[in-house]
Length: 341
View 1 (spheres, one colour):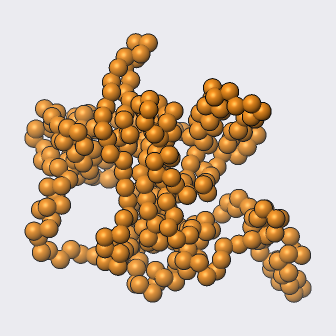
View 2 (tube, one colour; view 1 turned 135 degrees about the vertical axis):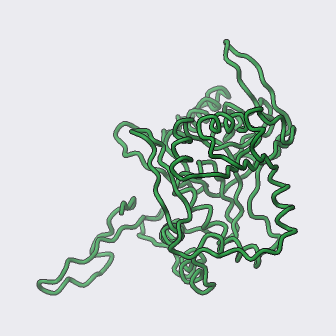
View 3 (cartoon, helix red, strand yellow; view 1 turned 180 degrees about the vertical axis):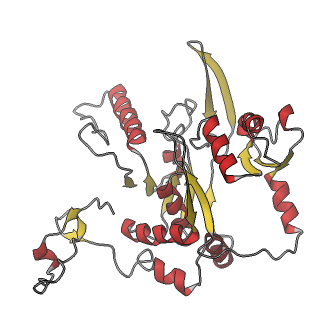
């Protein structure tokens, strides 16, 4: 297990010395607050009670978390995306570009051959995608004809749009139609157990071919109850989620925030700030609209944010400013930081 805090001195932990011949005491890691005191998460906080609360509610799977929170919270806001008002396409220096007013949100994705490999290994027959990725879905289908059903989240402006000719033999259904059809059914679905596979998570394949890892419900919930209390989440957090859902840290955070009743606001690396590549001039970035208190990030994205901040400060000509330092460097270990805003 990698610990990002400093090792707490023995004089602070006041651990008893092991008896002669006994095992050495465990190494304890922690963080200092602004006054230099060693601190840990409040054991009485909601996040710290996560494991006990899950056990008390009899929750052992991901569907059980969603069902429990939906039943207890009902109409309380849970997840949100920004409305897409307009899309602007233009050519700049021979390259076609796209700018959005407010912004369409999309996550990073894999290369075509990596997607085909993952689908074929998992023997997938149903794909859930967005209208903007229907063309890419058609490319996947040409390389993997095992797809029988495509469920589409419609575009806010054009709806389902034009279905590619190659998908005419596949059942292409808008997501809202699936929801409406489900409301008319009275089926009793078999419930998974904690030992059942919940997700097959594929790596990016940056070094070799992508590799799928089978994660059970127990695997994921164990990660959730280990990670969430360490982050000291508080009531009424606003979590900005913009990393891909194939990022286990992001995935576990989403599950944890659903259980803790915190608001999840989806974003995109391409629309994160008002200076992000896909944000139309005059529109605000995700951070400015969502006003998050917490988000996960990777060093590359943080470096882009820092560059944007420094560029804006330089253009405004603010006297006496100093450049914001980057989040990663050649001498630093690459880690996925969590940010308290």
